Length: 341
Image (cartoon, rainbow, N blue to C red; front, side, top):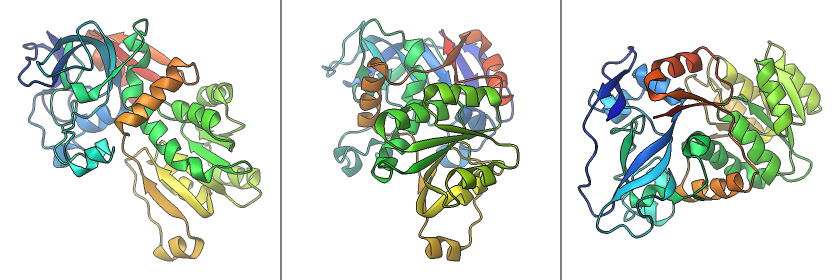
């Protein structure tokens, strides 16, 4: 089969011919990929930022946002069968540890992460598990929903945590209206009564944000902190969802968070420099976010199939993976890039 493999860090991945995966365990599922999202994390992987944490042997197949059709199942699989349309929770989890039993799949003590810790889905076929499969309506096109498997639940997971803070009369700032942010805006608009302020450097992204439910948009041109202060009466936001968190956005996010407010860090790459006195004197919170749970994905798909959340995508053939990554890195992709084998 064709697969997009990373052979060395700081170099373009290659499209290689590799053997198809095989069923080896009773709960294994092989999925024929219909869409694989191209994520900013893939750029960070190529730069070697995840190597210290994952220690994944090179070469390996990229791709952690995957949807498609069940191709083959192990002897113990009962929840899906060949031909079913599925989107895949990004982790392969054990189901037995305390985190799994608590519904906190993302912190499974023995979980594997296709695309980061083992071969992923930028390929014709992917090996995953029955626990990762969320069954979809058969008319769903996998390429239309694949990025919800990571970008979608990452945004939804953060919004889900912020919901108790965002009652009527509150304000939420969204930094970044790109691949994750445009999903977060829709989730906020659907699930909360907050006033939504979106900050982005790209005017086209801000136009999209307005269409998706933003009440106010702010151009990140150096005056964004003052603009948010004006829109919040000088108080700052009750919650800030930062889908960028690098190149200075992380300090903007902290500055835009009001007293007793919460700064949700979703993007990454920057460094937050905050005196501890500022934290305790204002009772501001910094909350980290990493992907989301299986239940988050199931809930998000209910919103998506009900028309409440839609992905704005640009598709590429598998052979054009390098072009998709380059376009993402250069900011030429509005929404999400999707590889279609």
